[in-house]
Length: 574
Image 1: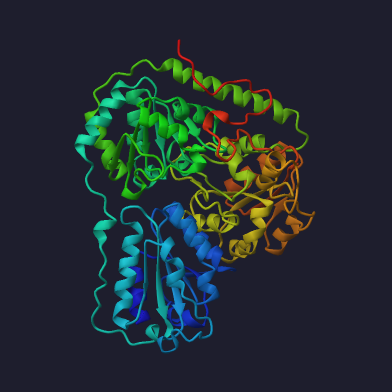
Image 2: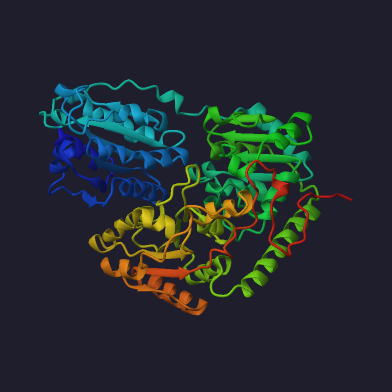
């Protein structure tokens, strides 16, 4: 049966199977022997599934992960949850004990289907040989159908070892629930009317803009309305940052001008976003403004469960973002309504922030994260795929890293998974071997999955890893400083390990720069020559405070700003 399954892999265009073998998945791995599909051996199953996420985001299609039962399957859970939160397609194949010992606590038996049901789009345990191929086909299709996401097929070992039947069992699935309806044209007309009448329209771009390929439509509407664009953290990857009306990502550690844009808009066109608390802080002000009519909220999303889940919109439209925006453009017959003063105010906030951060960086001994990212951006070619871990370094990239090509910024947003960067960067490199890949990680996040550095040489995956080394779980420490009266506990590391020696152990060149020029030159050379590199960038945790910061539960205009940035985030009209 597994031989036939491998043939289906090929028909689906699967080039890699990522994972770690074990007893319950051995028949499938044996069937891959000598096949035209590369098996990529990770050092931990979590690494394999994060790599699948990186691959999917860079390639725009699902990757396949195969692991054994019990601990192998359970080690996928974090990555599957991460993919589910960020709408990333992948197919996980887990081995399972033979069907004759089901429910008897056999060696490495785990109810993986029960565990992952809440965090997958489709999960299926194969009970008959004739179901296996059909189940994979359904899982692969559904991972990309409608809103993307992870799927999982559980394969008992005896089923894998069975002869291939000459027929396929039908897997009954309601595909209709994943496919959005055509956009409601009456609702689009109402939306077009609100946008035409707006004095301060703002577009909020979520990750759905990227997956639907709707970047051109978002930019066209912005130009038509002369409306600023704000993004969520996942939506940051959807908008070229050199587009003059892009204000950046909003939220807890978003740009101040982006927070101000959302908080002071009179019409918000929100596309492909789930209204996360990390974007809005709290929903009370927005919902009250919508309810009173002070703000018209237009929400377009492919998933009907997101419409009204956190904020009830004025107009809710369930549809594919690209299709809905295309029709909305046809209905827009407006001239810009003169919101230049509002945009100039937002740009003045940006200017003030950049000037303030430059002064802070000048006064900071050693490396400052904000300036280090400016230097790294200069060193990296325009099409570089940048991947981040989770922590203060990630929030600095949210604020300071410029994305020029849609899809070239990959991060763990919804789940916030430390350890994401190293394997996700390797997966992105698998998908895009002709493009530079840069992993910007923190020392805490890096240590969670650094064992997967072995794949750099094993599979010729030359990624550049820059570690923001502040010897702390810095974002948690920042909360301890501000919210817990500086009661610092369990967030500071010792001087161990030596990251240069770690790199040497994996046969990767490493440096510990002392100046910004050394940093820029080393990274530029490695990316230009497609060579791997580990950079240990020493940063003082006492000065590494990520601002702006909307504290948990606060509204966007309450953002804590850097010292010396004397601006208000509430707009005052003449």
